[in-house]
Image (cartoon, rainbow, N blue to C red; front, side, top):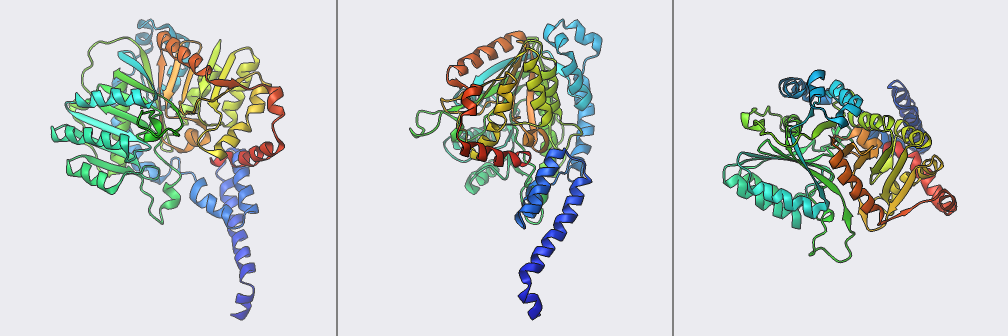
Amino acid sequence: MNYLLDNFWWFLLALNYLLVFITAGYELMHFREPVKSISLIFALFVLPGIGLAVYYFFAQEFRKSKLFNRKKLYDQEIIKHWDKKLILAEKDLLNYKNECVEKKIKLVHLLQNNQSKPVTFKNKVKILLNGEKKFASLFEDLKNAKDHIHLEYYIFNSGLLGNRLIVHLCEKADEGVKVRVSYDYVVSNLSSAAIKKMKAHGIEIYPFMPVWFPNLTRKLNYRNHRKMVIIDGNIGYVGGINICDEYVNFEENPKDKMFWRDTHLRLEGHAVKSLQVQFILNFNFISGKELKIEDTFFPKIAPTKKIGVQIAASGPDTDWQNIMEAIFTAINTAEKSIYITTPYFIPNNQILTALCTASRIGIEVKMIIPEIGDSKIARYATNSYIEQLLESGVQVYQYQKGMVHAKTMVVDGMLSSIGSCNLDNRSFDINFEINAIIYDSEIALEMTKIYKDDLKHCRELTLEEWLQRPAAEKVREALARLWAPLL
């Protein structure tokens, strides 16, 4: 016993490295991206104890695992029943004479083959800039709800905005409207009083994958990053804006609050059916019940504008990285221009190579990122990629008015993407995400005008200037980049 006590730390270190070798072997046998595996194995070996903790809590992958099997069973039943009704045959696609769809037909086929997600045409689309416009529109639609309200949010916080929303939801529930709410357990800050109030009014509310030890390792890393609402099956909201005071530029906000620039989308029409499917799948998963499908969930849609919209959803429950592949395809099939706004640019090799290559073959590639951002390590990791972008001719702009949190892309004046997905590994491979892909030149023109207006509040970076940044910044960027696959 004395020998053990005298050599306690040596035994502990030996045990650590025994586990490290076992874990490293396990990691290698899973055939992940080499860069990601190297980063993980590096952390395991050079950070005794900490490396194992990081791997245990953050780095394990459960794509196609038993954790999501039940959800995938729901997927099969519901998607077969509803999405196939909306998928158009090739001849029907051509009959719509939508030039944008014809030009971007490869992307249409990709999403249909990957996840049976149809391109729909009977849609109205409204772009909503910033939280104040999004919530003014949403609150008005909530007042007019007749049958059901479905909300699914990454962040749902108590506060000025959250409490206003809860009042609206409780009032509608009292009127007989069925209200269902999903919020992410890890990042949301709903008070117990707020939850009790909603339940008392008959609102069904469930957290997404609560983290209780010992299940922490399986659940902490996979979060529901989506922000969407479905009202009566014919109005939908999707985009980047959470239910949080920080996201809204209200007059009553503190004067020192950072201006928040974000983009959301209001949809009417057949595309809302795809949003509805995704909500039902998630709600079944988190509630442990199978929600009875009502006809009112998928009502008949009156003829509206013929705007092509396709919903791309991805997560660890999908066989493919659907949104990443959609972005990759959009970049690789671009002919003239690519305009991107993202709060976090920590790409995989595919997206980075696609952007740099597009620029070098003469396509105009512009990217807006925050100058400061809301995460130091993410900012340094993002900055570590800027030199390579600038060397390839990509025009990089830092937004200076405040925090730019929009996740948008406009390609060739024909295709627009608005949703929850950042250009980073976490959004591509780990979190549950959802984007709306819009095939319409008028919407693309509106998005381009918005983009050019945002550029007025940006500073363009030059390669000469960027190379002169302080050495300390370069060191921070290098260290942050090592952790990039885990961010």
